[in-house]
Length: 365
Ligand code: PMP
Image 1: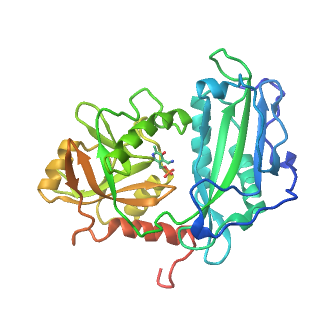
Image 2 (image 1 turned 90 degrees about the vertical axis):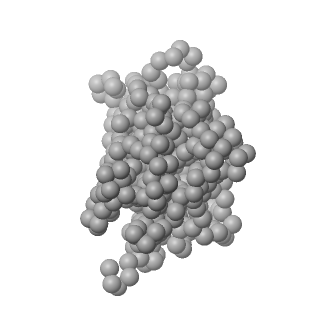
Image 3 (image 1 turned 135 degrees about the vertical axis):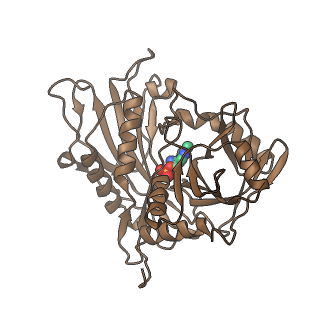
């Protein structure tokens, strides 16, 4: 979309400066999600005229925007959530970063934000994480949360494609999600709230998908639930949970043992963790793995008939989050966490993914 002669995003053009007042990584056990930030950030500016300016790594800090910047009025922005882990060997690794970058490019395209060279961006992001490697906490479950963000910065009130954008990355050290253990969550299934719909942007990681979820989230909290279970349609298809994809391990209506999650039909976010779980389950080959919808009707029937083994959410923040209860039409549905038939599947996925992320296989693996 850039005019001819416009610059591509290039790692080689990186301009770097270092903070003169470095912070220190707080005691990891005290970290609250997304409140503290590593010393540096990456900033890449684009204009339609010039293309991508030289990328900059500089001390983390405020930047200025025109009050008429498009992002502030029409939500023209998208972002990513990914992590770097400090392995048991003390080396820092990113988990499947290409997938997040591909998703950011896809989100950018949907929002008419400019495209960029994904490989160059990964090199820049890696450079930033290396520079702030001291901010990657050690220990099972700890990580550096990486937040790439792409915003429309042109100062203009007309609703239209931006002629200026800023792509930036900030990093935040985060603690173990399960400080109090692997606790099952209670969900609110209330069809009055809809997260995404056909023809919408459910498969895009844009801020505009998250602002509308905060009120329902408060509504859920008032009812003693940690997250919303997002339903769609007259038949109440079960789609996602909070900011996670959802899996159910059950014996399906045909009597087949199955791990099921909603299909990528445009309304579902294509989770990196979701794909990892599907890949692992396919490798194991122990049960059928299906990308298909199931409905609240099917779920309640299967629960009555004792065919549900386990249900869990999957996402970068928590990795795997078991579901214990669903509040549905003023009734609490109890989800078994494990039956002899299934074993502890969510625990098994969690252990397997942790082993990959922390490079911590036992000598038997
Ligand atoms: N669904 C939604 C709506 C999300 O916000 C997220 C978090 N990015 C996910 C699913 C899980 O995606 P991932 O595994 O890539 O974190």
